[in-house]
Length: 321
Ligand SMILES: Cc1cc2nc3c(=O)[nH]c(=O)nc-3n(C[C@H](O)[C@H](O)[C@H](O)COP(=O)(O)OP(=O)(O)OC[C@H]3O[C@@H](n4cnc5c(N)ncnc54)[C@H](O)[C@@H]3O)c2cc1C
Image 1 (cartoon, rainbow, N blue to C red):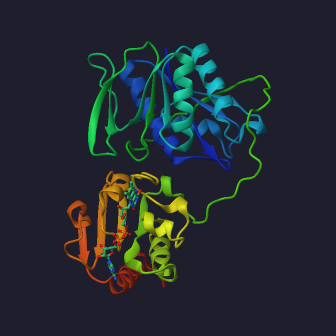
Image 2 (image 1 turned 30 degrees about the vertical axis):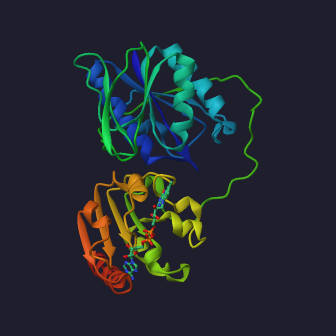
C-alpha cells in the first residue's frame, strides 16, 4: 500500500501545482502510515531525485521524449498500471488542466472513487473523507470515498509546498509503445511571463479600463509584482484581451494569494472564478460596486489615477528605478 502522486511538467520544469500535490500526498502517506511515491512521464531538466525533499521516497519515471507532450489516454493507462502494480491505495493529481483530464480516466480504470477539487487533507479518523469546493467555491462538501483505491485531485494553491531533506530513488518504467490516438501538431505558448493558473499574484482588468490601449498600466503593475494578468469576460469578448485571460464562471477559476481587480464590477459570475483568492484588492471608482463586498482591501478611486500610484509604490518598495 502506498500513495502515488502524478508529477506534471512543462518545458522541462515540474509545475508548482505538482509540488503542492507531492507535499499533500506525502502528508497523506504519513497519516496512513505508508510511503509516498511519484510518477513522471517524460523528462525534466535538473536532478529528479531532489524531489524527495517534498516527502516522496521513489519516482517511477518513463523517460521517453515521446511522453513529454500530454496525451491523456496514454498517461491514464500508464498511471493506472503503475498504481495497480505498486499497490497504491491513494492516487493524487493536481486539479489543474492535466489533472482534470487524467484523474477521472485513472479513476475509471481503477474502479476508484474520485474527489476532484480537494482543498484540505482527508480526515482518516473514521473512513476517508475529503473536503472539496462546490458551487464555484461558494460552499464546501465533505465527501467520503469507500472504494479500496481512492483518487484525489487537489485544487492549486490550496495546500502549501513543504520541503524537507529527503532524496528520492528513481525507478525506470518501461512502457509499451502505443500509437497515439491524438497528436499535438503544433503548440503556441500563451503570452505573458507568469502562467495564470499557477500565479501567486494576479492583476486583472475590467471594462472600467475603457479600452485595450489602457492595458499598459495593468501589465506594468503585473510586471513589478511578478504577477500574471487576467480580465473579466466582456473584456475578452470585446477582443481587448486574449480569451485565455478571462476568469470567472465561464472562464478560468483561479486561487492566487493576491487578486487585484481594477475596474471590475464584481458580478457573481466573475466572483465565481476568483473568490478562492486569499486576499482580494479592488480598485473601483464606484463605492457601491458589488466587488467591495468580497474585497479584503478596497480603493475607491479612478483607476487611471490609482494604478500609476500603486506601480510607483511597488517600485519604491522593491527598489526598482
Ligand atoms: C452565463 C453568464 C456567464 C458569465 N461568465 C462570466 C465570467 O466567467 N467572467 C466574467 O468576468 N463575467 C462573466 N459574465 C458577465 C458578468 O455578468 C458581468 O457582466 C461582467 O463580469 C462585467 O464585467 P466588468 O466588471 O469588467 O464590466 P462592468 O460591469 O461594465 O463594470 C465595470 C466596472 O468598472 C468601474 N469603473 C468604470 N470606470 C472606472 C475607472 N475609471 N476606474 C475604476 N473603476 C472604474 C465601474 O464602476 C464598474 O464597476 C457572465 C454572464 C453570464 C450571463
